[in-house]
Amino acid sequence: MADTTSCETRLRQAVLNGDAAAAASLVAEGLAAGIPPRTLLDDGLIAAMGEAGRLFEAGEFFVPELLVSARAMKAAMAVLDPRLAGEARTSAGRIAIGTVAGDLHDIGKNLVATMLRGAGFDVDDLGVDVTPSQFVQAARAGAHVIGVSSLLTTTMISMRAVVGALEDAGLRGRVKVMVGGAPVTPEYAEAIGADGFSDNAGGAVTLARRLVAMARPS
Amino acid sequence: MTSRERVLAAMRHQRPDRPPFDFSWGFAPAELHRLQAATGASDPEEYFGADTRMLRPSPTRLATDFSRYLGELPSGAYADEWGIGRRPSASTDAAHAHLDGFIYSLLDASSEEDALAYPLPDLDADYRYEDFAARVAEVQARGIAALAAMECTIFEVAWYMRSMERLLLDFADGSPFAATLLDRITAIREGQARRYAGSGADVICMGDDVGTQRGMLMSVRMWRTWLKPRLARVIAAARAVRPDVLIFYHSDGDVTAIVEDLIDIGVDILNPVQPECMDPVALCQRFGRRLSLWGTIGTQSTFPFGSPEDVRREVRTRVETVGASGGLFLAPTHMIEPEVPVANIIAFVDAVKSAT
Image 1 (tube, rainbow over the protein chains, first blue to last red):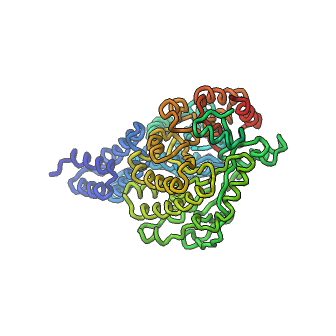
Image 2: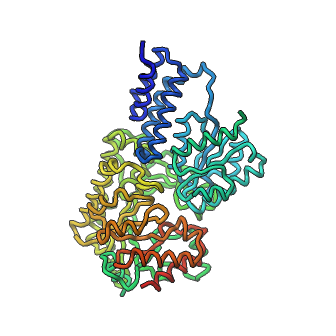
Image 3: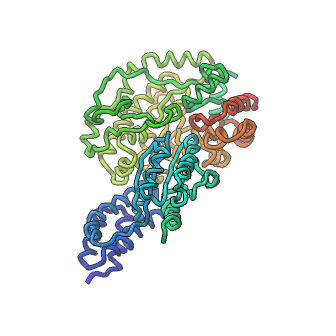
């Protein structure tokens, strides 16, 4: 009988190494050994992506390391997903994310979306140049958290309009707003009435967990 | 001192009469219109007496069909000479959107053959530089420093074709496709660098954004593997023609981790040194006369959100703490965006001109 601890540890290591083939075969090995799919997901893949985010925050991982880890997780999920379908899938929360209207920069936004998916969130990526009304639609569609990104000081200013539009739509009570992007500061986030700020993709995951817990009725 | 004498003195760490300045990355269109309306200046560089002018090669005569790489372009989109599909912002006033949306021409490529088959531009062709030396001489005859533009030197132009995500995965995978593509781009840039150096231009302005607000986009090790040797080849090509041509390197974000390497391969000037994430004083103390700083007046902070007095204070602080022995060129750290008060632009120029 396989050593279950060892399989999950090796799976985490494979994801952190960005080794997609090893991650996929370790999932198959774990399933064959009778490890519950949910355990492989939570203690293997999601735990690994959490560690990748921590290493990114600590300056030990950079964008390419996150991308290869996310790719390895995706390869493993292709094997795991059919087996998870039978179980009630519990999402970490629903997040709609986009780059604010007028701004086409998406590198940071994409990275945050990737890390949120890696942490088990359902992510609705609205793309770039997203208007306040598109964010409102996403909130109506059930997002717990709205993530807004900007790279320019010009468009950072229009993040306030997103918060305002959610207020006008009467949704502000049940949806949380997180903001990020190069010029954005915690002070600015607070000034426009956002619920949280992160300056990096690893921190954004931690923040999203906290905000979902606040937004989602327990 | 003429503008050109001032630029050359400052960048060689000989003390100029005052620090040189320019508007390195220009103005967002809406801001330019507002500035023109407020000052009556049709051309801010002429109106304010900027110390430099940026020159580019003549337009290409190639009419490469990139449709097999880009498919049918959406309305309003176009392909540039690299085959990069460019799509302006859709939903808001395009006057303040300074980045196009990209349609990636090499997103699905995978092999070395794909990289070899791709039709790259003729930026190294003689005909594009026929009048370049004359244009350089014309600028210099007016006492102004002539800059030769080579931004997005290797990495950026490659990811505009490939997508950043795919190109960084290529780097992580050690992809022969990416190595071949980068080598071909580098060869074109070497040809361009030789022509620029031979033209008598004072400064060649290279650059690839490899920094983020918090540090490097990729590890220093990855940068040293993929980008440093190629940038070194481009610089060496220029220096082989003219050993004393000044080399300017631009990267947004905090690139402190590679400054020593940049100096090693021949970079003289670092731009834009965003004060929000890089410390000009620390750079000055660490690298001294080996590096000049160009920029340093924050477009994420003081320009949009400060008062004219804040702008003057930042200029004075920089001159006192960094510029005492030369090595300082003052400029906004990026494009001047529409929310920047015109009074701040005027205050910037006034403060620089009254500095000693």
